[in-house]
Image 1 (cartoon, rainbow, N blue to C red):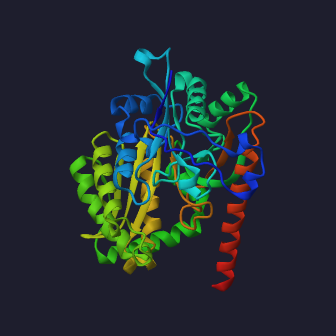
Image 2 (image 1 turned 180 degrees about the vertical axis):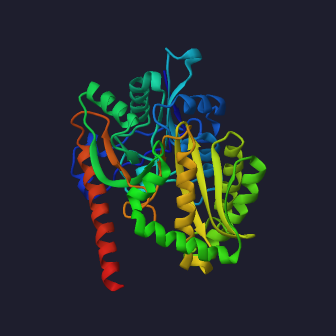
Image 3 (image 1 turned 60 degrees about the vertical axis):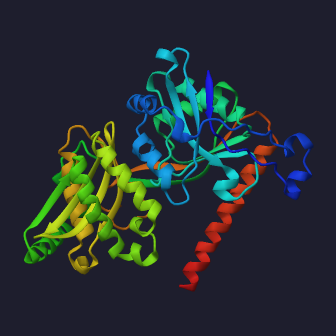
Length: 400
Protein backbone atom coordinates (compact mmCIF):
# COMPACT_ATOMS: atom_id res chain seq x y z
CA UNK A 1 0.00 0.00 0.00
CA UNK A 2 1.26 3.46 -0.89
CA UNK A 3 0.15 6.68 0.75
CA UNK A 4 0.87 10.27 -0.28
CA UNK A 5 1.40 13.18 2.07
CA UNK A 6 -0.06 16.48 0.90
CA UNK A 7 1.45 17.01 -2.58
CA UNK A 8 0.46 20.46 -3.86
CA UNK A 9 -1.39 20.29 -7.17
CA UNK A 10 1.02 20.09 -10.09
CA UNK A 11 0.22 22.90 -12.49
CA UNK A 12 -0.54 22.41 -16.17
CA UNK A 13 2.44 23.14 -18.41
CA UNK A 14 1.69 26.27 -20.40
CA UNK A 15 4.78 27.32 -22.33
CA UNK A 16 4.73 27.51 -26.12
CA UNK A 17 7.05 24.52 -26.40
CA UNK A 18 4.72 22.38 -24.37
CA UNK A 19 1.66 23.67 -26.25
CA UNK A 20 3.09 22.40 -29.51
CA UNK A 21 3.31 18.87 -28.11
CA UNK A 22 0.33 16.59 -28.22
CA UNK A 23 -2.31 17.35 -25.64
CA UNK A 24 -1.66 14.30 -23.48
CA UNK A 25 1.89 15.47 -22.89
CA UNK A 26 0.94 19.07 -22.25
CA UNK A 27 -1.55 18.38 -19.49
CA UNK A 28 -0.72 17.14 -16.00
CA UNK A 29 -3.43 15.51 -13.87
CA UNK A 30 -4.80 17.40 -10.92
CA UNK A 31 -3.36 16.25 -7.61
CA UNK A 32 -5.47 15.77 -4.54
CA UNK A 33 -4.34 17.12 -1.17
CA UNK A 34 -3.53 14.55 1.50
CA UNK A 35 -1.72 14.71 4.84
CA UNK A 36 1.00 17.38 5.19
CA UNK A 37 4.52 16.51 6.35
CA UNK A 38 3.66 17.70 9.83
CA UNK A 39 0.99 15.00 10.07
CA UNK A 40 3.26 12.04 9.27
CA UNK A 41 3.29 9.78 12.33
CA UNK A 42 6.45 10.80 14.19
CA UNK A 43 6.83 7.46 15.95
CA UNK A 44 6.86 5.62 12.62
CA UNK A 45 9.16 8.23 11.10
CA UNK A 46 11.65 7.79 13.94
CA UNK A 47 11.48 4.02 13.60
CA UNK A 48 12.13 4.28 9.86
CA UNK A 49 15.13 6.56 10.49
CA UNK A 50 16.62 3.90 12.74
CA UNK A 51 16.17 1.30 10.01
CA UNK A 52 17.22 3.51 7.10
CA UNK A 53 19.56 1.93 4.57
CA UNK A 54 21.52 5.20 4.40
CA UNK A 55 21.61 7.87 7.13
CA UNK A 56 20.56 11.48 6.64
CA UNK A 57 20.62 13.70 9.72
CA UNK A 58 18.60 16.35 7.89
CA UNK A 59 15.66 13.98 7.43
CA UNK A 60 15.37 13.12 11.11
CA UNK A 61 11.87 14.16 12.19
CA UNK A 62 13.00 16.58 14.91
CA UNK A 63 15.05 18.46 12.30
CA UNK A 64 12.74 18.24 9.28
CA UNK A 65 9.60 19.19 11.18
CA UNK A 66 11.30 22.20 12.77
CA UNK A 67 12.47 23.37 9.34
CA UNK A 68 8.99 22.78 7.94
CA UNK A 69 7.42 24.81 10.73
CA UNK A 70 9.41 28.02 10.33
CA UNK A 71 12.53 27.71 8.13
CA UNK A 72 12.87 30.59 5.70
CA UNK A 73 11.40 29.52 2.34
CA UNK A 74 11.15 25.92 3.54
CA UNK A 75 7.71 25.68 5.17
CA UNK A 76 4.67 23.85 3.88
CA UNK A 77 6.67 20.90 2.57
CA UNK A 78 4.93 17.67 1.54
CA UNK A 79 6.18 14.11 1.33
CA UNK A 80 5.92 10.96 -0.67
CA UNK A 81 5.61 8.06 1.72
CA UNK A 82 5.43 4.30 1.25
CA UNK A 83 4.21 1.63 3.63
CA UNK A 84 4.91 -2.06 3.30
CA UNK A 85 2.44 -4.91 3.45
CA UNK A 86 5.32 -7.15 4.61
CA UNK A 87 6.36 -4.70 7.32
CA UNK A 88 4.97 -5.03 10.85
CA UNK A 89 1.54 -3.36 11.05
CA UNK A 90 2.02 -1.84 7.61
CA UNK A 91 4.87 0.31 8.93
CA UNK A 92 6.41 3.23 7.11
CA UNK A 93 9.19 1.95 4.81
CA UNK A 94 9.98 5.02 2.73
CA UNK A 95 9.81 8.80 3.11
CA UNK A 96 10.86 11.54 0.70
CA UNK A 97 10.02 15.23 1.45
CA UNK A 98 9.14 16.99 -1.81
CA UNK A 99 7.92 20.25 -3.35
CA UNK A 100 6.67 20.96 -6.86
CA UNK A 101 9.04 21.91 -9.68
CA UNK A 102 7.12 25.16 -9.95
CA UNK A 103 7.91 26.01 -6.35
CA UNK A 104 11.52 24.87 -6.44
CA UNK A 105 12.57 26.40 -9.77
CA UNK A 106 9.55 28.34 -11.08
CA UNK A 107 9.24 25.83 -13.93
CA UNK A 108 5.53 25.03 -14.53
CA UNK A 109 5.99 21.39 -15.50
CA UNK A 110 4.62 18.26 -13.74
CA UNK A 111 7.53 17.13 -11.59
CA UNK A 112 8.36 16.93 -7.91
CA UNK A 113 11.67 18.01 -6.38
CA UNK A 114 13.45 17.06 -3.15
CA UNK A 115 12.66 19.67 -0.52
CA UNK A 116 15.81 21.33 0.79
CA UNK A 117 16.03 20.56 4.53
CA UNK A 118 18.52 23.38 5.26
CA UNK A 119 21.39 20.94 5.10
CA UNK A 120 22.61 20.11 1.61
CA UNK A 121 21.58 16.46 1.70
CA UNK A 122 18.28 15.00 0.48
CA UNK A 123 18.89 11.25 0.72
CA UNK A 124 15.44 9.63 1.07
CA UNK A 125 14.82 7.36 4.03
CA UNK A 126 14.38 3.76 2.85
CA UNK A 127 13.98 0.73 5.10
CA UNK A 128 17.19 -1.29 4.78
CA UNK A 129 15.32 -4.61 4.93
CA UNK A 130 13.17 -3.69 1.92
CA UNK A 131 14.94 -0.74 0.29
CA UNK A 132 13.94 -1.60 -3.27
CA UNK A 133 10.30 -2.12 -2.27
CA UNK A 134 10.38 1.23 -0.49
CA UNK A 135 11.78 2.92 -3.61
CA UNK A 136 9.11 1.25 -5.78
CA UNK A 137 6.46 2.52 -3.38
CA UNK A 138 7.77 6.09 -3.54
CA UNK A 139 7.79 6.01 -7.35
CA UNK A 140 4.19 4.78 -7.36
CA UNK A 141 3.21 7.50 -4.92
CA UNK A 142 4.77 10.12 -7.21
CA UNK A 143 2.79 8.81 -10.18
CA UNK A 144 -0.40 8.87 -8.15
CA UNK A 145 0.41 12.48 -7.28
CA UNK A 146 0.38 13.33 -11.00
CA UNK A 147 4.13 13.77 -11.41
CA UNK A 148 5.88 12.75 -14.63
CA UNK A 149 9.34 12.92 -13.03
CA UNK A 150 11.21 13.37 -9.77
CA UNK A 151 14.25 15.57 -9.29
CA UNK A 152 16.36 14.32 -6.40
CA UNK A 153 18.67 17.12 -5.30
CA UNK A 154 21.88 16.64 -3.32
CA UNK A 155 21.88 12.84 -3.11
CA UNK A 156 24.99 10.62 -2.82
CA UNK A 157 25.20 9.12 -6.29
CA UNK A 158 26.83 5.88 -5.17
CA UNK A 159 24.97 5.56 -1.88
CA UNK A 160 22.72 2.70 -0.85
CA UNK A 161 19.55 4.76 -1.26
CA UNK A 162 20.28 5.66 -4.90
CA UNK A 163 21.26 2.06 -5.58
CA UNK A 164 17.80 1.00 -4.37
CA UNK A 165 16.14 3.67 -6.50
CA UNK A 166 18.17 2.50 -9.50
CA UNK A 167 17.03 -1.08 -8.94
CA UNK A 168 13.41 0.05 -8.74
CA UNK A 169 13.78 1.95 -12.00
CA UNK A 170 15.45 -0.93 -13.82
CA UNK A 171 12.62 -3.18 -12.72
CA UNK A 172 10.32 -0.88 -14.71
CA UNK A 173 12.62 -0.35 -17.68
CA UNK A 174 13.58 3.20 -16.65
CA UNK A 175 16.92 4.93 -16.15
CA UNK A 176 17.90 7.97 -14.04
CA UNK A 177 19.71 10.95 -15.55
CA UNK A 178 22.41 12.75 -13.58
CA UNK A 179 21.86 16.49 -14.04
CA UNK A 180 24.84 17.70 -12.06
CA UNK A 181 27.50 16.11 -9.89
CA UNK A 182 30.39 17.19 -7.72
CA UNK A 183 32.73 15.77 -5.10
CA UNK A 184 32.20 16.60 -1.44
CA UNK A 185 34.64 16.38 1.44
CA UNK A 186 34.15 13.67 4.05
CA UNK A 187 36.08 12.32 7.02
CA UNK A 188 36.98 8.67 7.44
CA UNK A 189 36.49 8.62 11.20
CA UNK A 190 37.78 5.06 11.52
CA UNK A 191 41.35 6.30 11.02
CA UNK A 192 43.81 7.52 13.64
CA UNK A 193 43.22 11.27 13.80
CA UNK A 194 46.84 12.39 14.18
CA UNK A 195 48.01 10.27 11.26
CA UNK A 196 45.07 11.43 9.16
CA UNK A 197 45.80 15.11 9.86
CA UNK A 198 49.50 14.63 9.19
CA UNK A 199 48.75 12.97 5.85
CA UNK A 200 46.26 15.69 4.94
CA UNK A 201 48.12 18.81 6.01
CA UNK A 202 51.78 17.83 6.33
CA UNK A 203 54.16 18.53 9.18
CA UNK A 204 54.91 22.10 8.07
CA UNK A 205 51.26 23.21 8.06
CA UNK A 206 50.57 21.47 11.36
CA UNK A 207 53.55 23.22 12.91
CA UNK A 208 52.18 26.59 11.75
CA UNK A 209 48.76 25.76 13.20
CA UNK A 210 50.36 24.82 16.53
CA UNK A 211 52.16 28.17 16.52
CA UNK A 212 48.85 29.96 15.92
CA UNK A 213 47.22 28.00 18.74
CA UNK A 214 50.01 29.02 21.12
CA UNK A 215 49.43 32.66 20.16
CA UNK A 216 45.69 32.21 20.68
CA UNK A 217 46.51 30.91 24.17
CA UNK A 218 47.90 34.36 24.99
CA UNK A 219 44.22 35.36 25.27
CA UNK A 220 43.50 32.54 27.74
CA UNK A 221 43.81 28.79 27.96
CA UNK A 222 42.49 27.19 24.76
CA UNK A 223 39.72 24.68 25.42
CA UNK A 224 37.60 22.47 23.14
CA UNK A 225 34.12 21.76 24.52
CA UNK A 226 31.35 19.43 23.35
CA UNK A 227 27.76 20.18 24.40
CA UNK A 228 25.59 17.04 24.32
CA UNK A 229 22.65 17.34 26.71
CA UNK A 230 19.49 19.25 25.82
CA UNK A 231 20.29 22.02 28.32
CA UNK A 232 23.95 22.32 27.31
CA UNK A 233 23.12 22.31 23.59
CA UNK A 234 20.49 25.03 24.06
CA UNK A 235 23.05 27.22 25.84
CA UNK A 236 25.87 26.49 23.38
CA UNK A 237 23.54 27.20 20.48
CA UNK A 238 23.17 30.82 21.58
CA UNK A 239 26.95 31.16 21.53
CA UNK A 240 27.04 29.70 18.03
CA UNK A 241 24.29 32.05 16.81
CA UNK A 242 26.14 35.11 18.11
CA UNK A 243 29.40 33.99 16.50
CA UNK A 244 27.76 33.26 13.15
CA UNK A 245 26.03 36.64 13.07
CA UNK A 246 29.24 38.48 14.01
CA UNK A 247 31.02 37.47 10.80
CA UNK A 248 30.54 37.61 7.04
CA UNK A 249 27.24 35.71 7.21
CA UNK A 250 25.87 38.47 9.39
CA UNK A 251 27.10 41.13 6.98
CA UNK A 252 25.50 39.23 4.09
CA UNK A 253 22.27 38.79 6.03
CA UNK A 254 22.30 34.97 5.99
CA UNK A 255 23.03 34.19 9.64
CA UNK A 256 20.34 32.03 11.24
CA UNK A 257 19.57 34.50 14.02
CA UNK A 258 18.82 37.28 11.51
CA UNK A 259 15.54 35.66 10.48
CA UNK A 260 12.93 34.91 13.14
CA UNK A 261 11.80 31.71 11.38
CA UNK A 262 15.33 30.36 11.01
CA UNK A 263 16.18 31.18 14.62
CA UNK A 264 12.98 29.44 15.76
CA UNK A 265 13.76 26.35 13.69
CA UNK A 266 17.29 25.82 14.99
CA UNK A 267 16.30 26.60 18.59
CA UNK A 268 13.62 23.93 18.32
CA UNK A 269 15.62 21.33 16.39
CA UNK A 270 19.01 21.29 18.10
CA UNK A 271 17.86 20.67 21.71
CA UNK A 272 15.24 18.13 20.58
CA UNK A 273 17.87 16.17 18.65
CA UNK A 274 20.34 16.44 21.54
CA UNK A 275 17.81 14.73 23.77
CA UNK A 276 18.10 11.72 21.46
CA UNK A 277 21.88 11.91 21.13
CA UNK A 278 21.60 13.24 17.57
CA UNK A 279 23.09 16.73 17.93
CA UNK A 280 26.27 18.15 19.44
CA UNK A 281 27.60 21.69 19.49
CA UNK A 282 31.36 21.94 19.55
CA UNK A 283 33.14 25.12 20.60
CA UNK A 284 36.64 26.49 21.01
CA UNK A 285 37.42 29.03 23.72
CA UNK A 286 40.37 31.15 24.64
CA UNK A 287 39.88 31.59 28.34
CA UNK A 288 36.21 32.56 28.71
CA UNK A 289 35.93 33.93 25.16
CA UNK A 290 34.32 31.69 22.53
CA UNK A 291 36.24 32.02 19.26
CA UNK A 292 34.53 29.31 17.16
CA UNK A 293 31.53 26.99 17.34
CA UNK A 294 29.91 24.42 15.11
CA UNK A 295 26.74 22.33 14.93
CA UNK A 296 27.09 18.60 14.29
CA UNK A 297 24.19 16.22 13.66
CA UNK A 298 24.46 12.47 14.19
CA UNK A 299 22.44 9.70 12.54
CA UNK A 300 23.38 6.04 12.84
CA UNK A 301 27.16 5.82 12.22
CA UNK A 302 27.44 9.16 10.44
CA UNK A 303 28.04 12.74 11.55
CA UNK A 304 27.04 15.83 9.59
CA UNK A 305 28.95 19.12 10.01
CA UNK A 306 26.09 21.58 9.58
CA UNK A 307 27.50 25.05 10.21
CA UNK A 308 30.51 26.88 11.62
CA UNK A 309 30.71 30.32 13.22
CA UNK A 310 33.86 32.18 14.25
CA UNK A 311 34.88 35.39 15.96
CA UNK A 312 36.67 37.23 13.18
CA UNK A 313 38.65 39.29 15.68
CA UNK A 314 40.75 36.13 16.13
CA UNK A 315 40.98 35.36 12.40
CA UNK A 316 44.78 35.44 12.34
CA UNK A 317 44.78 32.39 14.62
CA UNK A 318 42.57 30.35 12.21
CA UNK A 319 39.85 29.59 14.79
CA UNK A 320 37.66 27.70 12.30
CA UNK A 321 40.54 25.43 11.32
CA UNK A 322 41.55 24.95 14.96
CA UNK A 323 38.00 23.91 15.84
CA UNK A 324 37.87 21.53 12.87
CA UNK A 325 41.13 19.87 13.95
CA UNK A 326 39.67 19.25 17.41
CA UNK A 327 36.40 18.06 15.88
CA UNK A 328 38.35 15.62 13.69
CA UNK A 329 40.07 14.16 16.75
CA UNK A 330 36.75 14.02 18.60
CA UNK A 331 34.97 12.12 15.81
CA UNK A 332 37.87 9.75 15.15
CA UNK A 333 37.93 8.85 18.85
CA UNK A 334 34.20 8.00 18.81
CA UNK A 335 33.65 4.33 17.91
CA UNK A 336 30.02 5.07 17.03
CA UNK A 337 31.01 7.30 14.09
CA UNK A 338 32.48 5.84 10.90
CA UNK A 339 32.08 8.78 8.50
CA UNK A 340 31.51 12.51 8.78
CA UNK A 341 29.88 14.39 5.90
CA UNK A 342 31.12 17.97 5.60
CA UNK A 343 27.85 18.96 3.83
CA UNK A 344 30.04 21.67 2.30
CA UNK A 345 30.35 23.08 -1.20
CA UNK A 346 32.57 21.30 -3.73
CA UNK A 347 35.54 23.64 -3.38
CA UNK A 348 35.24 24.64 0.26
CA UNK A 349 38.57 26.32 1.12
CA UNK A 350 38.60 25.39 4.81
CA UNK A 351 37.31 21.82 5.05
CA UNK A 352 38.66 20.34 1.80
CA UNK A 353 42.36 20.39 2.79
CA UNK A 354 41.58 18.78 6.17
CA UNK A 355 38.97 16.16 5.32
CA UNK A 356 40.47 14.49 2.25
CA UNK A 357 37.83 11.81 1.76
CA UNK A 358 35.50 12.45 -1.19
CA UNK A 359 32.15 11.15 -2.38
CA UNK A 360 30.04 12.02 -5.39
CA UNK A 361 26.86 13.97 -4.75
CA UNK A 362 24.49 15.39 -7.32
CA UNK A 363 21.05 16.08 -8.71
CA UNK A 364 19.24 13.28 -10.51
CA UNK A 365 16.21 13.31 -12.83
CA UNK A 366 13.98 10.27 -12.32
CA UNK A 367 11.48 9.54 -15.15
CA UNK A 368 8.30 7.90 -13.95
CA UNK A 369 6.91 6.54 -17.22
CA UNK A 370 8.52 4.97 -20.27
CA UNK A 371 8.72 7.13 -23.43
CA UNK A 372 7.01 10.05 -21.70
CA UNK A 373 7.33 13.12 -24.00
CA UNK A 374 7.11 15.47 -21.00
CA UNK A 375 10.35 14.21 -19.43
CA UNK A 376 12.62 15.64 -22.18
CA UNK A 377 10.91 19.00 -21.65
CA UNK A 378 11.59 18.84 -17.92
CA UNK A 379 15.19 17.84 -18.61
CA UNK A 380 15.70 20.67 -21.11
CA UNK A 381 14.16 23.25 -18.78
CA UNK A 382 16.43 22.16 -15.92
CA UNK A 383 19.53 22.20 -18.14
CA UNK A 384 18.63 25.67 -19.39
CA UNK A 385 18.20 26.89 -15.84
CA UNK A 386 21.56 25.44 -14.81
CA UNK A 387 23.24 27.02 -17.85
CA UNK A 388 21.77 30.41 -17.01
CA UNK A 389 22.84 30.15 -13.39
CA UNK A 390 26.39 29.18 -14.33
CA UNK A 391 26.58 32.00 -16.90
CA UNK A 392 25.44 34.51 -14.29
CA UNK A 393 28.12 33.31 -11.86
CA UNK A 394 30.83 33.62 -14.50
CA UNK A 395 29.68 37.14 -15.35
CA UNK A 396 29.70 38.10 -11.66
CA UNK A 397 33.27 36.87 -11.29
CA UNK A 398 34.32 38.99 -14.27
CA UNK A 399 32.62 42.08 -12.83
CA UNK A 400 34.35 41.58 -9.49
